[in-house]
Each structure stands twice: as C-alpha cells, then as structure tokens.
Image (cartoon, rainbow, N blue to C red; front, side, top):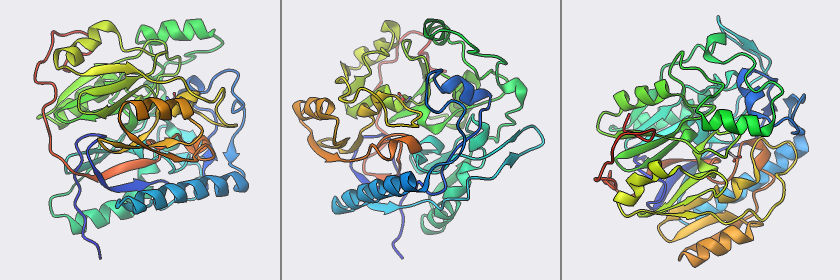
Amino acid sequence: MQSTVVSSWNDFDPLRHAIVGRADFTCIPPSEPATEAKVPEDSDMRGMWGPRPLATVERANAQLDNLVNLLKSRGVRVDRPEPIQWNQAVITPDFTTGSMFGCMPPRDVLLTVGKEILSAPMSFRCRYWEFLAYHTLMQRYFDEDPGFRWEQAPRPRLADDSYQAGYFDEITIEERLKRTAALDFVTTEHEPLFDAADILRIGKDLFCQHGLTTNRRGMEWLQRHFPDHRVHSVNFPGDPYPIHIDATFVPLRPGLIMNNPNRKLPDEQREIFKANDWEIVDAAQPSNDAPPPLCYSSVWLSMNVLILDHKTVIVEESEHQQAEQLDGLGFEVLPLAFRDAYPFGGGLHCATADVLREGTCDDYFSQQVAAHESEHI
Ligand code: GLY
C-alpha cells in the first residue's frame, strides 16, 4: 500500500495528493432555513428536490474522472470518497429534513491545515452526515501517517435558533445586498458554524468569509483550535449569496490574489495585503452568461480554478477569459471540461481537497494591521 503523508498549508504550493469528489446519488435537498437563503428567487432549483437524474450524474462523474486522470498525469496521487445513498432523511433530536446532499465537493467539508484534516460543522441540515463519505480515507491516513491529526469540529445542533426565521422572505436583490453588506446573515451566532470552503489558508493566516454559512463564533472556535494561526474575518459586499470563498477571493501564488470584481474586499480589509506587498487583481469576467441548469453556484465558478503549483493551473475549458488572464500572469493553463459537474457542488477547486502539498507554514503577513472587521479574531 502507498504510504500517506498529510500536509498542506495553502492552495498554491505543489500539489502531490488530493481527494476528488464523486457525483453518485447526489440529491437536490428539500428546502430548509439555510438553503432558502442561498437559492435565488428566480432559480430553476426553487421547489425542486430529490435525486438528480442518472444521466446528469453519469456526465458529472465522467468529468470528475477526467479531472482524476489529468491530476494523475501530472504526478498527483488521487483518492475518492465513498458516496452514501444520499436520498435518506436526516433525523436528529433537533430537526428532520428529507434528504442529504452529496460528496462531489470535498472542499466544502474538509479543511486541511498542516498535518490536520478537520471536518467542518456544516451549516445546512442536509449536509449533517456528509463527512461520513470521507471516513474510510481518514481512517487510512490515520493508519499510514503517524503524524496525521484526524479532527472533527463540534457537531452543531442546527435547531431553529441557529437560523433567522423568515430571513430573505420575499425581498429584492437590493435588499439582500444591503443585508449581506451589513453582515446580517441567515445563520445566527447561537453556536459555532462554518463550512470548510469559507476558509482561505495562506500559511500562518486563515481568512474566513463571514457569510451565510460561517459565523463569528465559528471563527472564534477556529482561532482557539489553531492557536498558532491568525484567524481573520473578511466579507465581500456585492455578493447577495455569500457562501464559500473560492469563487470570490482566490490566491494564485505567494503575493498574488484574484478578487471577484463584483464582490470586492472592502478597502480597510485590503490593508493587511497591502502592508505585506500582496497584489489583489480583479478576476477576468466569466465567459458564460449563465450557470448550467439546476446549479447552486453563479457564473463566477469561472475563477474556481485548481492550482497545481506556482506556475500551473487547471481552468474550466470554456472559460477563455479567465484562462487568458492566468496565461498573462505567467501560468501554464490546463483546460478541462467541467461544466457538467458544476450543478453537483461547484467547480474545480470545490471538487477537490488537499491531502499533500509541498511547502511549510510560511508567515506571509508578518505586518499585521489595526483591528477592524478583518481583525485577527
Ligand atoms: N459562492 C459561489 C458562487 O459564486 O456561486
């Protein structure tokens, strides 16, 4: 058996071992307080729920398999989760919901910080058991790497007091934008909540998106759990559905980040990047006018790229403008068809989780700045 080493401190050092998700049995979960806030009023997903059609699952799995083959051809070892029959109710003492979701996006659930892989609490009820799809892999890494820290954040209760009742009921997009810019989100501060994909790892600093799926208490928990790191809260006015940071703020290599031009990091939160000579560039416009059918995500999956090392990046093949920008920034761009996988939980970054990247825990932000919303928690 191949021996495992778990270690990853960021999203850009050379990738050696990753987990790539699977689309099997994925469901559109029934409405619940958190998904009500996430699914746009005019989305074709409103009112839909149940298992996704088999033909779409097969197409998504074919593209996920192509991602696996591309990674392997670049010397990256790949593991896959074990899908559960997701079309089962979730019943706890605190809530019941009609089905689970899936395991196409391991990035949403698994946060790798150095030698630790932490399963996030997850703030959607339908995602309560999703970590189980990775249990066999975690057990294997635990047996093969004596330094591996297999961790689980506190299981949330996700009872009604974890959500604001009626949040976003029949309000305009402008009102949504006002609420999110004012840091008024569907999740309350009742208990620590975060999804792993809200956390951007840049060495010693963890930047957490405060939004629909991650609250301040979740960040406080992360700061206590990772006492040698600096945890920062960031937010991105302009996003009516702020969930997961990786179609909004994407580091490309040390010193360079791309930011969604419709969801700009506020000036005062840019200070820490400026003070440490990091450049923030606007991401290119998406090349597609709309996401594929029955997709939770926006057209900005264009910037949900997977970086293999400081000079190599995988980009969805129809995203010509994003590819051109990255080429201009000095990257070798590897195009890959992936839009059939988008409805199952996101883009190329979402569909993967790091097990091993070369490199160490570098201190890229040794100049810390005065406290504000992006303060060190
Ligand atoms: N938050 C993912 C998106 O932009 O769709």
